Length: 258
Image 1 (cartoon, rainbow, N blue to C red):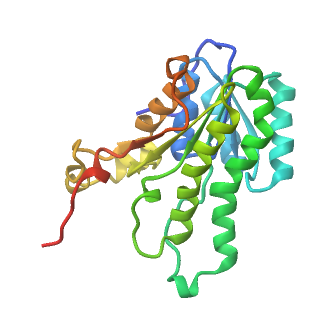
Image 2: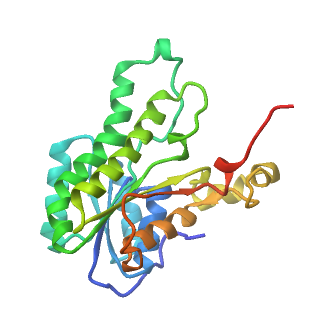
């Protein structure tokens, strides 16, 4: 499990922008990439926390405040990255309104629907739009973070499921439009324990939580980060337009109520 701080690594000259990076999966991805020598720009709406974790991650981390659903903020933020580093090699679109549950459909507020799709789906389009000229220059890559909820649902999760399903379609559309210079793929996590390490130690998950997964455990942010890092690497040079499900096999498990 990656802890904050002590992630010093030699710089490989490549720059990655990771959105929603102040906590959870985004923070895990940023920390992992730093260990591989990337210069990582953490983008988030949480200014204080984002600045704090960037400082903790060391000299290869830099923070920029950004609401990904606001095109002006995206444009300014990307310009700041280019002004600071002069290049961009990778984009990881992770920012999302993470709580999938809303009110029943009859009571679903249109403003909430628009906000969820604005952050979770439109944000990825806006980031790609403003980053792609620079990604093209370095044969870069984009990874979108979707969810297994693009394929499976609980009740009252329409906005979240629609946003993540749209992200899958956006991924293969971008892959076709931006290739061959830019590769675009998608990672769909299942149950990932995104809590801070200190909270995980205080409140460990139950044996049942882990045992219901075919691999025998709940996922970690490192499980997702490792897949993202590979997709951004030259080793994945023949991979684009694809979805990679990281869920411990849960989406392949048949579940019946007795």
